[in-house]
Amino acid sequence: MPEKGWYSLTVRLSTARMIRGLARDKGLTVDELLNELISMSPSKKWLTCSLCGVKVRATNMPKHMVKMHPK
Image (cartoon, rainbow, N blue to C red):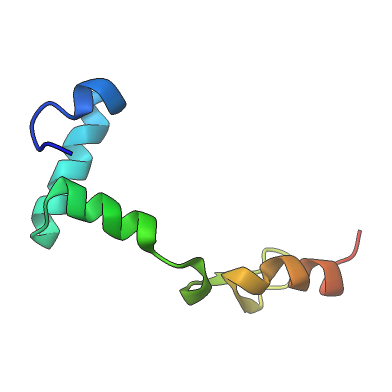
């Protein structure tokens, strides 16, 4: 993805400026930043259950909701 002009076809200008700023802060190109965000594995993230407040891995959240909070 080219650094200049890519936003005109994909996102709003304000969003493009924010993404470009985030990339500069991390010392990455826009393409590298977007690839990093896309390749992030959800299994490494922890979520907090909104009903009971327990920390659960993102991949286990559906199982937690079925087991602990049945409808």
